[in-house]
Image (cartoon, one colour):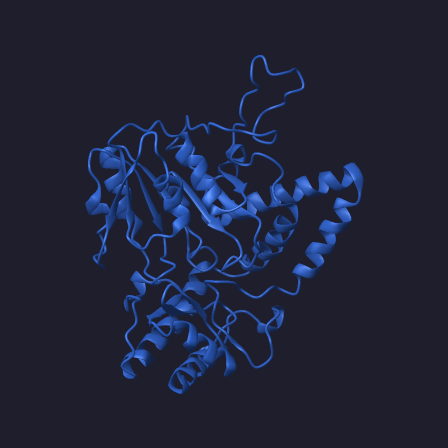
Length: 366
């Protein structure tokens, strides 16, 4: 299987199998020009500020197409944890309320709730590998379900349909983190009440900005409890009364978003728009399935579900030697990802079947 993307479009080191998209993807060469355009606009007074505002709206439009939602439902935060925190702060919590999560959920989804003390929020935690384990936790005191569409730890993909139905039965909100999915997995974000994603992984962008989605149909009256100049209407006539919030998802964005990161994101979205996400998914899962088969033949156990309908673009292997394995593979020209006691191999469109063979050879030597 050859690559879907042209590897020459990326800053890929010669002779390296780059299989760590779930950590960081390589930069597109075209991002150099995006950063120069930002530098020019930043230096160009008010006309430059208009250029920055145009890029913000371009990015919102590109993301609305990628996630199949309305333009007004897309805003920006600095990272996923900030976005989830804004949602957590906005809810009227009562003693005995709970949220439902998986035991291996990413900290950015859990942290904004776990530290709350007035009142404390119960964390109902699902263990094991049953597909509906999170939905099965929901009870009449569940206020919110937090879930990553694809697990950072195991590469498992969650079926959001049963989770959505469980939330609807008790009137709970569904918050989805698409960080490990957006950029290769077809996304219908309207299944969530709120959704977020970092942009520096499969979306081919950089750090500093994350996507924030507000489902205005499901949550028409939602309001954050804090604001800044960008999320409020004009304060030119003072603060009595307090100016209203913006009527779109940019109410998530309290101040200036990270303009340089958004210029890069626009270039990334332009690049991804050349491909159907169904084709990208088929490509990366052709590689995950091939790798899982090779690992099985080598009697190496993966924590990633073998069924492609239940995994994303990563294959994970738990090991107490994870760091040593990743370091040894790097010496052989295979860049994988280490952390949390597992080795993670993550594919994107620039990868090919040859990378699977490189992984197998490097594992044998490690």
